[in-house]
Amino acid sequence: IATVLLIAITIAAGLAIYGWVSGLIGAGTNTHMPTSESATLTILDVTNTTATLQITNGGNFPIPINYASPTSNVVVMPSPNGAKVSVSADEIPAEGTVIVTITGLKPSTTYTVTLNGLKDTYGDPVISGSVSFTTPQ
Image (tube, rainbow, N blue to C red; front, side, top):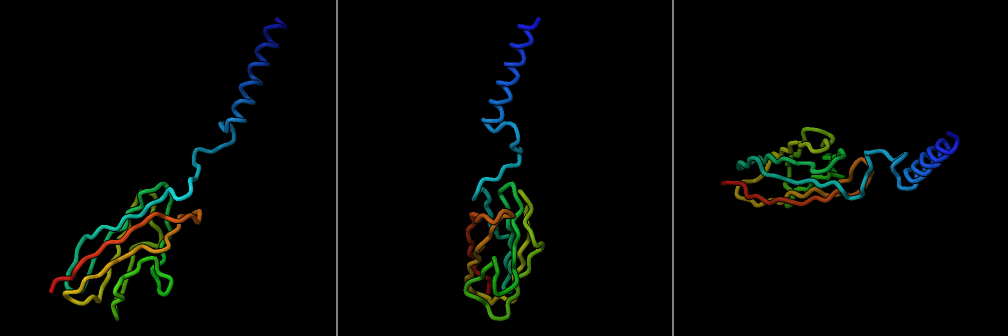
């Protein structure tokens, strides 16, 4: 009986050490990989003075968004005078979306909207792009 108990204790101790060394014990399932988040812009609607866009978070962590000048994450070029950018939320949820509305645009003008300087809740850069559209006359 003593021999069987010693073998069982040795196996249990070996498995515990293996689990600890390999990271199975103590590591949570919600690990963060830098630059794992991405944000995509999609055009929903464009009129001669207004554009409605959607930002989709393709990652597993929320992305805070700042749309107040001068440190805006949503950049409209050329910068329209008197235009107003509004975003439906202060944060893009994981695998979620927010709506961006840009008012005060000029008819028959091509604009490019870029997501600039987005960082996830861990402070890591978010992969993001831009989208261009032309307002009708």
